[in-house]
Image (tube, rainbow, N blue to C red; front, side, top):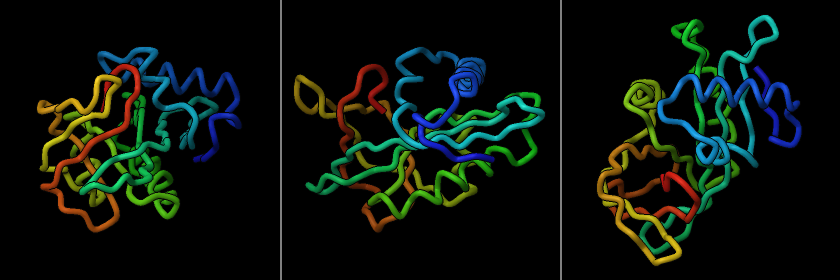
Length: 169
């Protein structure tokens, strides 16, 4: 397992991680991949191939009137032929080790990913969600898969994410 900043990941290795994500998620587009860039990447290799990936990037979340530095987990994927071998846990352990640099860690989980995160102590945010957009704060009521790790927060409080193109969460 290696942990490196986007700028330190070899282009071929980064392309392999991107292809892994495109194969693992439907839909998954260029905007989704762009959300995983600019932070730290955890990569698991087998025989020279990237078989698992995850990234953590800086985002800002507003909770109880306070903007927090959030290490936001993106693009966690394991090659389907390598699932069930603990690679997802390996990736998450590496990303969670970065928690001291942030006020909390956060992510938006797929249905398939929820059991992994819950088994690692991540907690689902129960409060209302929204996003700060160019048009102001917009509610995201259909978003029920936000998870956090670290900090002592009221999980029923409103939470607002910063703006980005594509999927807001």
